[in-house]
Length: 185
Image (cartoon, rainbow, N blue to C red; front, top):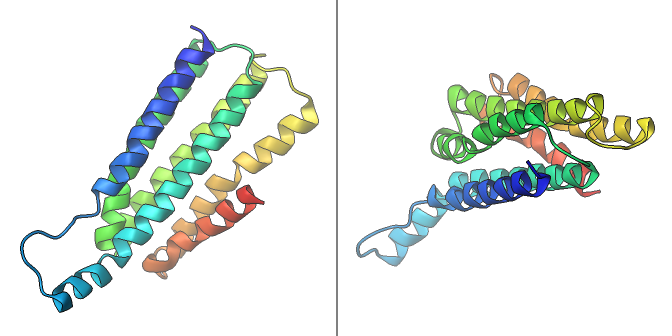
């Protein structure tokens, strides 16, 4: 298989997952007073926060994957399967986002979201390690190690979020701010 085919699948799935995120934010129906509308909009704060965080995290994952594909010379069956499993977990993000948007003050929805992010991060790092060990890309050892360290930021952020969840579930996702800031800088 040519790497462009897999790259097109990744782009399509990310586009769909990122679009589905907004469907987790319900618009009001029926006639509403100004006060009721204002209260409704204020009530969306948790959903909007979850949406924005997940959209940014998916954007980071897509960006990292795109940079990975630029380094790839070829793909093989093992790499394809790692990516298929990775995409299967990526597609769970709208579900785990909706749970935290609706129940962000509870431990279990946050744990599910953080486990979702942890699995995505671990599979992305596993993909990077796999391609280097199997000669699918040609980069120097120093560059490989530097990028691997950056890729491991997501699992570390997710582990920190998991540790924070029993203490303050509604604030545990702030651990991802470190990842987003580090990736943007």
